[in-house]
Image (tube, rainbow, N blue to C red):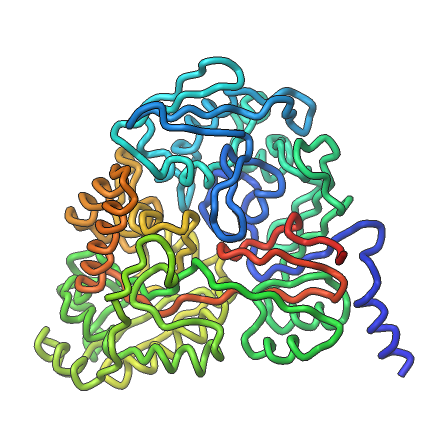
Length: 518
């Protein structure tokens, strides 16, 4: 009884010494905000660095380091910068830091997922004065303010000539954000210290203990024991239990993250991960055949994935945005579950007996990632494939994904703009360093039609005409099936009662969104 009372009190009392302790379910791989366009990295670096434009929890643009912006003409944007902002070391923030940042982003060494796609329309940055910028684009680009909400601004004087490891060690991690970097222990925790000179609202937390608790059961246990104040990525098996606990509060919101299976399009010939039933690599890549991709899609029972694996914390999907987002096509529905039709298509494509396939997946990045992959593999086995699942920690998965090693992989993408362009530019458009497209196209799909419509829609200033083009692209995507969409996630957090939390559609867990109850 005494222990139960002590536990209840530990969950109810304010965080000691104004410290917020967070338990997050995915590892941060770098403090360099330009190294890897990865959700956990982006969430953490938002505490340290600012962007010209910020996004609220519903992906709506808000003033950041820019107080206002306007289109001067179809290819020129003007950004008024916030006066009086200083870097963590006291030096003034100026337009020159923005120029430096934009030049740095495409040139970060060994980046496994670049931010270059967000800057691709820009041809020139003109400094009118230290607090006024004009950004010139090659063509009209109505999404520029939203794109720039994904690019953290770094200090020229702190980062010039330095690399990602210098950020990880703290030398270059000088931002303008609400928190300063205290310490970074890769894969374990980050310590953040309040920036009392921050230009915005003063944070209530003097310190933030940002713990990476990758094991689902351990994260829930830490929440129940009062070791942390808030957790994200609530395991679906624990969601109902945490909602019933009177000591806790759960917040939820529809996610901008879509989960899909990504077949390899890079190889025309053999892959060690796709063989005939005797183990001999197939002479041709079967995933380049749309009939094979359609067969695999028809073999997936998405409703069963939602109900049995995700326990209701997702929605079956045939596209990459949630209903109501800009570009969501109401006419596009998930493929029906039809294993008989799937078998016929496989036979038509020359695989009446199926083939062997290894599917690669992380086991600690997205909710139920390896469980979802196992379930999909079982569904494919029922149409004649012999499927092996190779699950691994995300830190091992990422470098292999970047080397385009996999024949079929579990993948997910969280749109940072809430508009259809983000997924198309980064994961569907042709991987091209010169054109700054396909930065996260790890399947190396390439189709000139998608490249063209993405460029045309991105340059269309009229919202109605642009959305019509996104609808056309979504319909074509559902026909071509370059990737096999599975689900749209629901984001959830649990926290001790007495705290309030602003849930975000982009799933980022921010200390800036947590406050003591009023």
